[in-house]
Length: 403
Ligand code: PLP
Image 1 (cartoon, rainbow, N blue to C red):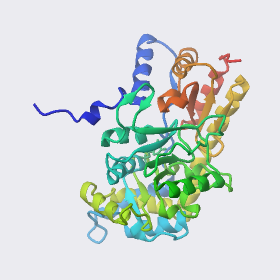
Image 2 (image 1 turned 60 degrees about the vertical axis):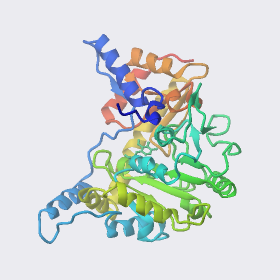
Image 3 (image 1 turned 30 degrees about the vertical axis):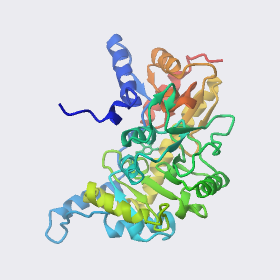
């Protein structure tokens, strides 16, 4: 019989969110006639796509039914959209051939690892979005699981003590650094000085940063960078992955992009951009043309106003959750420039706190330990939810006693 890919066998049992769903199902089955469970757990969007952007999607579909408007494969994406992304997000700093349209940031994060292969170590913020580590496992770069982490992954603790920005000295030379700001799960946003330090270290150590900016549109503080390419030198050492999922409600539509600068080179001087074009052309046939029509609408002035409205809505939810936690005496970060609130329960196991909140309030959260060893004793609250659910959840939280 054919053998199983040992890298799949090496994945630690249970991806975090299926495990949460399993526990939620078990709880619901044990309490059949109970009040409704509210989820503040996952990062899935809940609000409808706003009208202008939705019209862009509908119009994109309608055009496909006409002779003049029909289009087929678009490979790296519609030229007009690639140019628009460069203009709106990067001040035209990048050519269209440095902007690659994708079916979402997560998909690109998974595919990008192929550029570097199993011999390249990964350094990740700890805690971090699971695909960085799991993707490294799948490509065979993570090594064996040992205690609380993989041998081939360097975990960079982001804690209250270091202001959720890691000490970069353990980053191995010539490694891939995954960095997410605004961060999922902590909600922390790195400052210009911190990202400058990251770029400086990356250049010095011959590394590449995969910078995940999926939540940049939630940033309200104008002093905080929305892109790694606001930092000098980043074009020589960074790839940025981005997404329409959270700002435009495209979690189900599926559209994102990656910036792979031409200035980014491997040790032998070969072009990472050229390889990415080659690799994408081989295993990815481009994002949906309908989704791209929606994205074009999202980036015109009316669409950008809708992005602002939608992200403001979720940030208001975040404010309510933060206030409710503060009333309980629970300290938290995030929620101001990001849709996640990272709440601290000193001395507690985060799965125990998860169980307590589910048991007493019928609210699903995400245990911080699921995002990495430094997530222990934290709970992530997500602000993605309809207003009525958030208000109800905040009321229910009042019965908890953590002081
Ligand atoms: N990056 C981060 C940090 C995320 O939290 C998520 C989704 O939750 C994604 C990427 C996935 O984005 P997409 O829907 O574009 O695949």
